[in-house]
Length: 224
Image 1 (cartoon, rainbow, N blue to C red):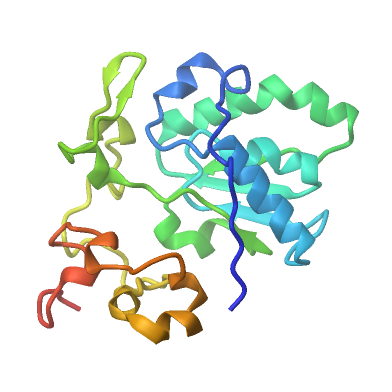
Image 2 (cartoon, rainbow, N blue to C red; image 1 turned 90 degrees about the vertical axis):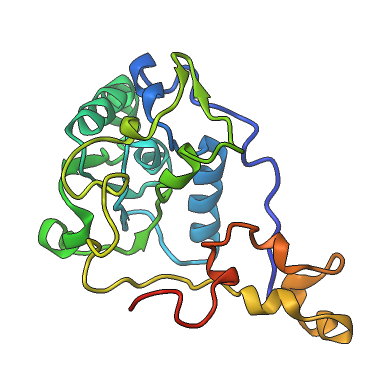
């Protein structure tokens, strides 16, 4: 397994890149991270200029702000109308620059990503910043914004919005990269053959101490 270590992906911010009201979104992409993702994908040959990048959790269009500079055609899907409007405002700030450089314009549409195939025709790459709604209610995490503490309702209130969904209301099928909590229990010589575990002994708690975390669930705790 080849391991890449990326550093300094969170050292910059959105100041001057997005309209002031867009800072209300609680889960914005890190500008440095999304640039690094696009650059890596191009270097590895996963995509090239002219390919389509899709963000199913588009928010205020952060992923679309940097796709044009790589020649990528960015298409975002966002459920909340207010965030779609803010994304378009952000895009308009840079529209003249993209036009002068002949860069493709990012496009965002309002839609439900649980039915992604209904609103998009295809993609060469999916790059997104997943929602982390539980973190907004975790007392151990102090997320604040310019207007004070950030509350879950700032994610939105539309039906189907991930912050408002109840257990059992998710789509019929979920496809994801499953956690590898069992790997954290390997010790001793096994570490030498597991590059992603190098750097010291790993404990189960390093995955998460949250009892609902998949690494701490017992058989039968989760419904199919």
